[in-house]
Amino acid sequence: MTKKKKTFRSKLEEQVADLLGQLKVEYEYETHQVAYTIMHHYNPDFILPNGIYLEAKGYWDAKDRRKILAVVKDNPDIDLRMVFQAPFNKISKKSKTTYAQWCERHGIKWAAVHAIPIDWLL
Image (cartoon, rainbow, N blue to C red; front, side, top):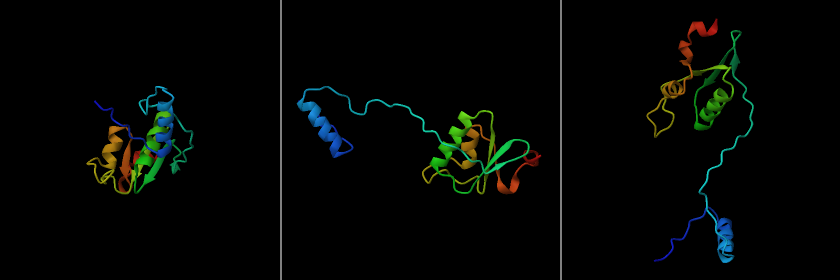
């Protein structure tokens, strides 16, 4: 029975693995995930007198969606709401989920730019 050769992400990782093997050092390769946080600052597009934050988006990529989720999670006291140019656009070519559905799934209020509820603004 032959041992299956591991696939590494780079030549350097393969060289380190070879060295560890030659030295008979046991190791695990990419078997654990370690969470980390990178501190960023969010600049909301609009802050209304009533304290509501409005974030206006045309195209909304995965990076921006992750940012909004992190802002909402880390700042539960902020009332952040999304305003979309096209809320029924899909979040990606491969997804059936729209911007609006994504917001609803994550408990984030949203509106189309031409249909912002008046009570948001008062």
